[in-house]
Length: 237
Image (tube, rainbow, N blue to C red):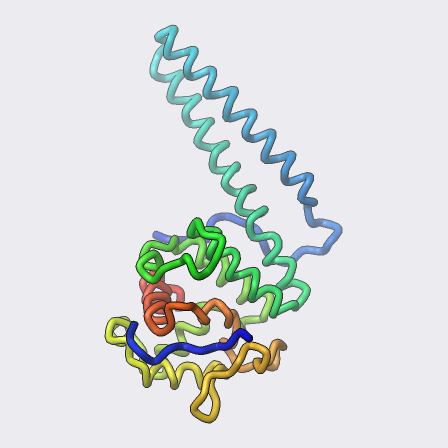
C-alpha cells in the first residue's frame, strides 16, 4: 500500500503563454480540434522549410531567408503552445473537477513524462537539478488555480521555509526539518508518516497537502531535498 514515507536517512523563467485557466465546458476545444491544429501547424512548418531550402539552392537574398525563418520560429512557438495544452489538459480537467487524488496521480505521470521516463522509479535525484522550471511553474499554477490557493508545489516550498528550511538545509538533508514540514502538511502524525489512503483528499486538507504521492519517491529523503532545492532555485515558493 502506498505510503507517504520520507526516509530520514540521508540518501527570466515565466509561464509559457498557455491559457489553461477556467473555462466553461462549451468553450473547451476538443482533443480532435487540438490535434487538427497541430497537424496544420506542422504542415506550415514543413512548407516553409521547403521554401527556405529552395531559396538556399537558388541563392536568394538574406532578407527573404530571414523573413521565412522568422515565420517558422513563430509557427514553432505556436506548435509548442498547442502541444503543451494537449500535455496538461488531463491534469487541468481533473483539477477543475476537484478530483484531487486523480490529479495527484496524473502529476506523477506528467513529471516522469517531462523527464523522459514512464515510471517514477526511473527518475533519479540528480535529474531533478535540471528539471525545467517552466514546466514546474505550469503544474504549480494549475494546482494553485483550481484549489483556490491551497495546494501546489509553491505552497509546499513556502511551508518548508516557514519551518526553518532553506537551500542549505536541503544540502544537509536535515531530517528534523523534513519531519516538521511533514507535520504541517498533514503527512506525518504521532511520529509516523501516514499512508496515502489516510490523507484527506478534499479542500479541507491542511494547506499544501497536495500533490502528495510525488514525494513518495523510492529515493527517499534524497529526492525530497533535491526537489525542494529545485523549487527554490526556480523561485517556486
